[in-house]
Length: 113
Image 1 (tube, one colour):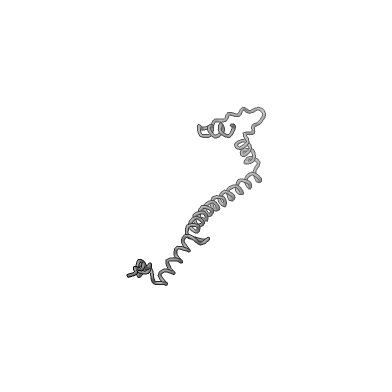
Image 2: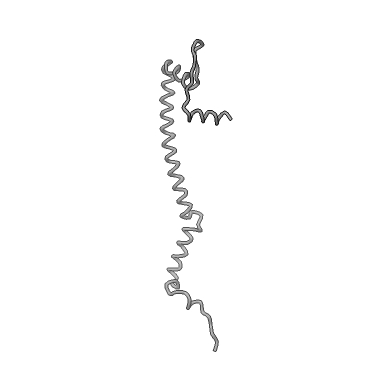
């Protein structure tokens, strides 16, 4: 009496079907092993969404800067105001007092180190 161990008996009939087996292999391949797998696609879509948000921000910023540049080029009063606020320029007979909020003070201390 010879006992044979047959692997076919241990595999459920559902997995013996070649079509089901092919579909399972295909799903594993597409979801995990392929270079364009689902995980990579998800990360790429997430990055694309972030880049679209950044793009909208920069478009708004460009429009705002164009408007400010136009104001600076067309009006000397705005140019003087910009120079005084941004570059802390002053006339020779003036005194300049700079008042910083605590958060601005911390930023200045960090950037000076």
